[in-house]
Image (cartoon, rainbow, N blue to C red; front, side, top):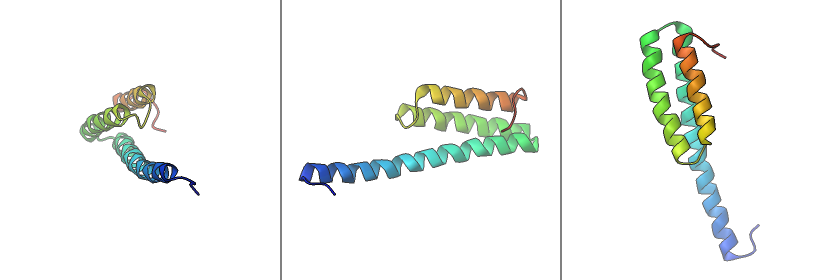
Length: 90
């Protein structure tokens, strides 16, 4: 329980940011799953299209500071390997 007005405001702001970040991370994970599903089904065109959409969302999430830039690079690299057929679809 916050003791001051400024602490109460910080708590409110943190809750709003947490919800916003959670929504962005959920969207990110969903798009990554779409790419992996397209790879698993063998639909190359759908996999490439889903990969391009995922890269845009990964970059946007990283630019907002929700995930680290190196984490974004790692996600994109692993997805690219999977789409190209060189990696495992974990």
